[in-house]
Length: 438
Image (cartoon, rainbow, N blue to C red; front, side, top):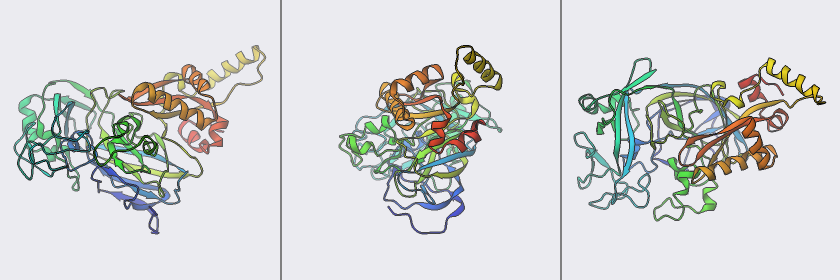
């Protein structure tokens, strides 16, 4: 849709959420000026929305913000200035789909098992895994329950968490909204009401990041499905969000669940609708690579972003410039000593100079990890004007393939030639992030 002609703001404050659907025809907030800031109070993703059937996308993300001057075929650099966890506790775990309570997909097509209402409104009665009730008929209506779950509390500095026993989990459950620090406009049922406590006394470190950060896709879809793995589950289905394979290509892969999307990183996202539509959510307090349980510690929090349009950089999916310590060992910029050693070695073998390179991380997504890896390699090759075999070689000797989310989101990270990055308009960001000049 056309972005309304309003004066661009230096800072856009966001405290409103979608109903779980990303729609290119829906109004956006803003616009924020090119170079301006977005400040948001985000709600937990995953479990809370998953047990709230009227939220039709599996997550509760912020209403998108238009960016001044962003046109289809551009890209937007998103600097993550700050991420702060505000929740005091959360609950999570491995999930079980409840048969009879959805049509094809429990994330986006929940159905009351008794009255048959699609995406029914619900009310909470008591605590535990049967506490979510259809507001029409009173039936147990949650599409998901835990196979193994836990309640985890955080210290005041949000540095460590500890999983608690049943008595503590139930005490927290009765004050779930407060412990979750749910934003005022959030409509999700807090997952803390389930009071899971299968893990007790487990200690975990916090390192928060955004599971969702990106731009609006050019096709209407559930927010959690804006990626090649979850999105592939929409193909040929019976519910309202069914897509064709061609329509799925209009996604922007904003749902990465990539732990590199944290404070200090730069995410460069494609623009596939006028104004781009920056949205965010699904803040994770912590997560190991792969998110192998299917879910992690989803929390409320505050986020500050700075956005900048990159004209004419047409991307298929996101690029990340991670903070230095998140780069694979082989993909880290060389020190002055290492470069001098390399130049001396090159001269011994008759080379006049060595390649100047800088890190880049290209996101690939697909129905499984093999197809996601292929997707990331192909995207990187097209972006940099290389063959896929060349990217494979570079990722092998100067980088790595890292799993962001199982079953199908990966990072293809490697050292790329600085001159090619400069031609894409990325030189200022490479210099800012890694001190490497074009």
